[in-house]
Length: 252
Image (tube, rainbow, N blue to C red; front, side, top):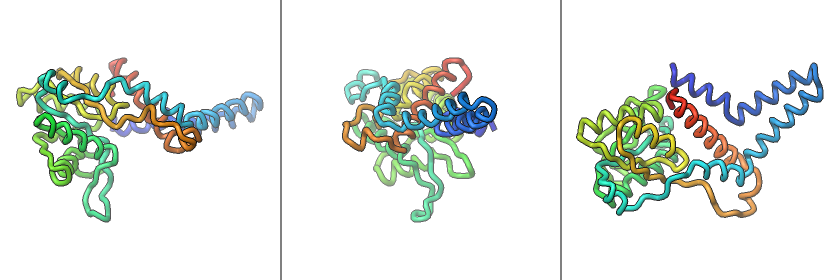
């Protein structure tokens, strides 16, 4: 119930839904105060346009990408004992395959986790639970790691539904195995919140970010408003909202 409520609140607070709601409020205000109402409507529409501009979305995403790429030497120096890879959303059953498949983001994460495993020989823990009656995402991740990328998953954490519970439930499994130092794999824009959650769960974290979005090359199509840029802006704002909630001690 709380998980569903968080998703609903997040959708209402973030663009484009928040901008649409603001425009509707402006139309209502315009019935009584025309100039004020029209101003609100115009500002709401401009916010969508600005957030759809790639240079703006790049700045927002880059503001979250604090951690550099990790090296094999750093893994060794940090005496890392395991790799933890966070889920990024499992899609519904793909009719062409007849099984649950990973979202593109989750697939990118497990590919990089296997890359690190090949460099350092460390065991992998996949974390991610189930929503909507699907298989737990971590189980789908395990299948992809072992069948497609020829890696190995030692642990699957199948109960968590958000970053905070990813950390708490993964920490229980790892500490039971005597593991306290991990390399954490997730997207660069998600690492600030994710690393904070795992550290609060009592683990020593070496951030291993991937999938960097900020600072892409400027071409003509990169400076025109795009739906994908709006999605990136919304994603970054979602992360900053999550970080704020996390720092207020309200969970994440």
